[in-house]
Length: 400
Figure 1 (cartoon, one colour):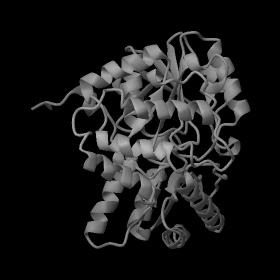
Figure 2 (spheres, rainbow, N blue to C red; figure 1 turned 60 degrees about the horizontal axis):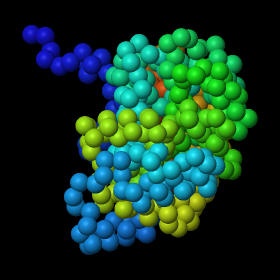
Figure 3 (cartoon, rainbow, N blue to C red; figure 1 turned 30 degrees about the horizontal axis):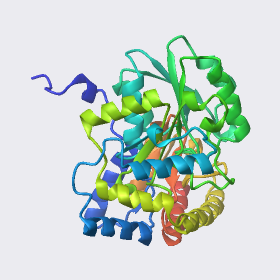
């Protein structure tokens, strides 16, 4: 019997990060001491003042009914104010903001509204695992331009120019980047914008979800460049910088035509985001930023800790991440080696080997467009990171 399921879902790849996290949870449930460095999951709790805002909203009893599809007006105004004052996106208004169920939902909404069958989307690679699958689900064609370890995994404006065809509808990147932690500079984004401005039917999707975890200084938004607000969908949210992954609040800031389209799309799929979560998000964006700054400082400390430990592992090659909470080392030195009944032919094999032998879960770089690498999340305690790196060093040292 043929499957009753649609081609759409049968052709979709499972999220590699979630798949590895699922394997790690299964092993933990069997009593195995797994250290999970696979998910982009802050190990901090949501700040107390944000928790309190949610409790207050419940006690007030005013946020139990359907919220506005695009989000509460005061939250949208606070987001727009933040974008004007902190990101220099001077044209941002509440009408340009649509609040969704996380940044992933925001990206899916956007591509559903932009793409026709066969439209191409240029992806700066390495890229977050879901970009390509969302684009394909929407009928689009992903076109990868690749950065590498030598250039901090940042593809160039010249590569973008060379990838553009008459079918190109959009370009997407993240900065700070998941999975590499690389950050595009103002000059690099200005060069990218100059290319986009030559092509009047192209839109930029700028994924800035890791904005608050940036070790280079203030994040630069491409939408702040003159002429680019009308060409840019800025994606952001509360999961990473405010340790609110489970609250599921993300948003876009987009030209009015796109914002209205996304609101229309969302109205048919999910309607507005949870009212209580939106009140918490408002407390986050409009309230005390000290907890977010303290978390970022801890991530920087952990980055430096892990960098030192990785440098002590023969065969590992890495760069210095400038933001987010990931390392993305080249592990090709271990390909073709074997130990403990495992043969490592690629990064997928290496991740399975480390899970089985070292009891540490990582994610294969193949899922991010870089099969020579693995992604290591350092959103874990210092004790866990030290122990995980020791286990990894031992297991890799046994490969021959």
